[in-house]
Figure 1 (cartoon, rainbow, N blue to C red):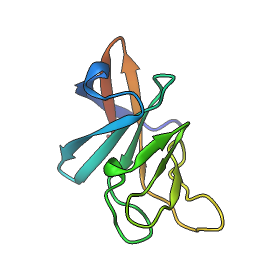
Figure 2: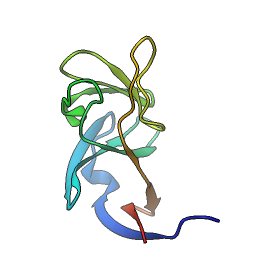
Figure 3: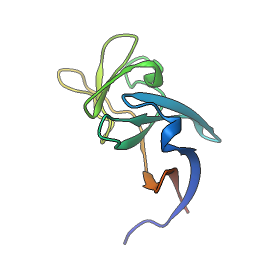
Length: 107
């Protein structure tokens, strides 16, 4: 059975620079919204699984971000660290409706 979501508009696509990020404060902590060069948008908890570094301050390349603290590469679609590193940043559901970026919260 598919999980039901509440979708909340948190930004406009133009608010997130291409190959960059924007931080959104939520009741559960900061979420980093990332925008790839192809305009795909991803949402991860703004904490690297290694030492908790701010992923939002990392370098976006392709559909990955490199943590600014220790150069771990995190896949934006899954939150998984690239081998040989092991760990996973919490991924959050995100979607675009026109120019609006919506963040999903399970009901």
